[in-house]
Amino acid sequence: MDILITYLEYPFVRYALIVGVLISLCSALLGVTLVLKRFSFIGDGLSHVAFGAMAIAAVLNLSNNMIVVLPVTVLSAILLLRTGQNAKIKGDAAIAMISVGALAFGYLLMNIFSTSSNLTGDVCSTLFGSMSILTLTPGEVLACAILSVIVIIVFILFYNKIFAVTFDENFAKATGTKADLYNLLIAIIIAVIIVLAMNLVGSLLISALVIFPALSAMRIFRNFKQVTICSAVLSVVCSLSGMIISILAGTPVGSTIVAVDVAVFAVCWIAGLIKGGR
Image 1 (cartoon, rainbow, N blue to C red):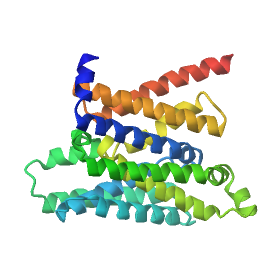
Image 2: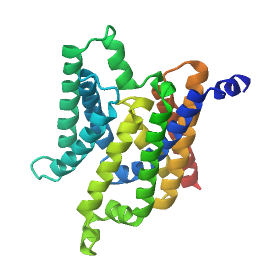
Image 3: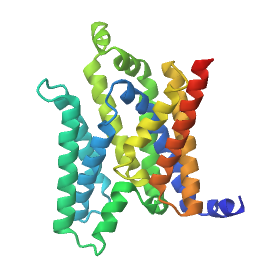
Image 4: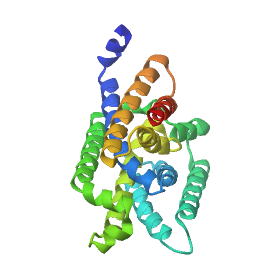
């Protein structure tokens, strides 16, 4: 505890914890919807797109890669949604096509135009996360906080519509709900979350941040609202625990958070079996 208190005296550690909590909260809110709609891997696909966009930003020597990464990821989310609705290209095939293409294109650009002496280390850090979460500036923390608050407000305001589209899209359309519009809104929100989570867990581990808390909550609860709340709480607790363990033990931030998520899922699985038996 003394070591932890000492670390918390540094502003960059507090910044990292704040950003980690906000990102994990946003990820958990939409994670339940993605799991129920059988579209869990959209996070994985968009994270690969974000990697390709980050490679473009690095080639252009942009100091703020958010200028490129956020618009490209949002546009890809819209394209992925439209492509997934095409009868000739199903949702899973569209995700695989876009994600693999973006990942290969990004790595190719980094190899051709890279000026770094440690290309392998840069790629590994981008894919699996690094300690860059501990080097956030106040401006980056503010930008992350603003985007996270917008995501949370949008989810609360359109909660009923998202609920309707999640469970029965055809019925929602029959009652006058613009299901396509809210599907588009969900895709855009997920794109924003993916971009925010890049510094926390890396592009290859983002989908775990979205999926595991939702699956853990579903092992215990059956009500949509209860699952969403439980997922948000578990996600925040796992992220905080993972970041604290990472800071104290010197382990990679992203991998540690996902490892904690896996452990909590195992506990919830056992709790669900016990609850079901009763």
